[in-house]
Length: 308
Ligand SMILES: [Zn+2]
Ligand SMILES: [Zn+2]
Image (cartoon, rainbow, N blue to C red):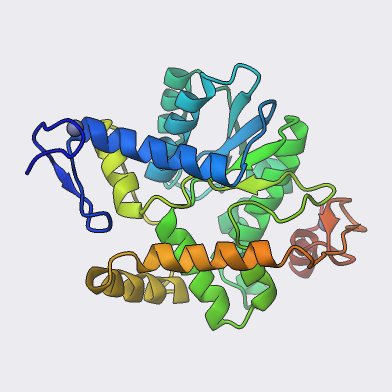
């Protein structure tokens, strides 16, 4: 098996393109794909201040590495990273350590903050209050809502103009199917690589790894020699996402390229829906932008009786 680019011994066969790559050319091909996604969907401007959502997991390590490489060619672009600690004992320790190490290596300033610091409670504390008050929402739901809120607050604090997240092709294909199966048509239309329109008060979130399969992100980290420590969050439960992940992986084996096709379809839908406008007002409690009177984060904190 020979590398299609340089003729050296290949170590990876891409079932989707049918090409074989050596480690070096494989890394280049992923870099190239990310650059293509950024250019094609105009994810960044030449003067952006980009905040990378980092966790220390494989996705955010690879995202930071590739963006740092690209940034060298754009001296007016600033890169920063943000890590949000949910406060789950033992779970985030490796991620914090690894993020500090990698950001230092790449020359990216890192800000570390936590749910406790921002909302007064850690995720375990919020989860146990919810259980006591019989609020029937899983910890992952709280975590997602509060994480998005934390990200937006910190992004504005740091004067960031974009937030970049490490969602890969598998994450995105799962999300598209999940919204479809739940009948959430509006969200389905908003799943493109970047927001269809800029909404006041929201720092736009973009996903440069959107077209890189999870397997290739893992391989990229492996070839770079990055330490990986993928512990599952203790709050993770068998969710609909797990079922969908399983189905998609099974189908991808028989039909290479279906994950890509699903995400492409969502992108086309989101560009077709530019006429669709969201009305944005501000939350009457916290002043953050929301499409309703009270934002989801405040609604959640109010239900739990822990509003600051
Ligand atoms: Zn090669
Ligand atoms: Zn609010």
